[in-house]
Image (cartoon, rainbow, N blue to C red):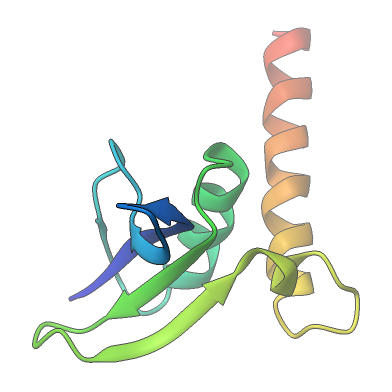
Length: 97
């Protein structure tokens, strides 16, 4: 099982640091859903600067930066579009029901 850890950048104790985002717990994810979960977390919580994906031993597998999902040349662009399209479809279905 993998875990997405939300990370924030900012001034903490008088120094610019990277630290776990307050009040947002790490999320366990499957390998297949890590990209989509990362997109959903970054869309929902603007205080997250990036997400660090780690395995069971705590070794970093990948980092998801916010900008990776917003550039059309990025390989994660398709994941972002798929998640956004699904959210729009859900909202439209809720309105017509």
